[in-house]
Length: 161
Length: 186
Image 1 (cartoon, chains in turn purple, cyan):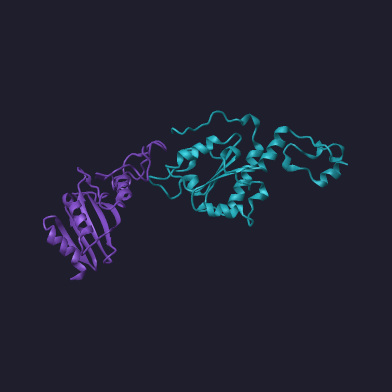
Image 2 (spheres, rainbow over the protein chains, first blue to last red):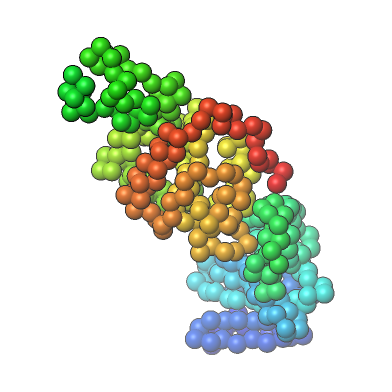
């Protein structure tokens, strides 16, 4: 099946690393182990039948209460074949880190800084992993589900918690 | 003679001036220096527009020819705080902008006034979140609060007239108000 070529090739090549994969209404999604993340991405980018040369989006979901808690989501697009794929990888709260993909797609640079800023995921190997939207003295990561909704930052005023 | 003067109407907006103080057929006016000074100040606001959000569109409207803040002498924007005496805070102030707002306020010379334009500047509005200052009075002193999302131009003009009354009632002993009550370290 043409629509599933990405999933099929991934399964054939990285059988051990694909936790789950599905193709719902043309949306291909694969959940992969984070240890193999870089190899999978290089394969997706360089394989002659895939050529996912555009890293469209990188974001994080916080499933508070589940283990592993976080899911890092990558949206890739192949300009050559007009195909999209969504790659997810799960990250536990205790480890809270994943390999940086800036070396594969430089456009991931600011996305990873934003994800670090708002969720506190550490991207190992990132050239400049600092806050991008918030300021350096900000405490905590505000898009985490357990960030107190009424928390006041020291720059602005007393903590009303 | 006195009756004639009264019918012509005194310069009531001049504070200390009344009909009985007119001498020599109205060619001499007795007033207090403080009052005439305040009278001049209240019709000559030099505003610094600190415009950060959508309220800015309403601010442009109220400054424009239709509502025309210039009728009240408050039209000329100065884009250096050192040349301004009315700080118009128009829009949402984020934590990241807070030190900048405080710096601008500190750079303005006395006497100076602060106008909180719109509910976000007044109280944070509905942005009760990690990024938004919950009202600029947590950072700097505010003279006039005009809520609304955005406020109607009539409300802004009403606020400006109330600020003019406040200026008219101010005393020289109020200025300077002393060391800046806020610092960038807060």
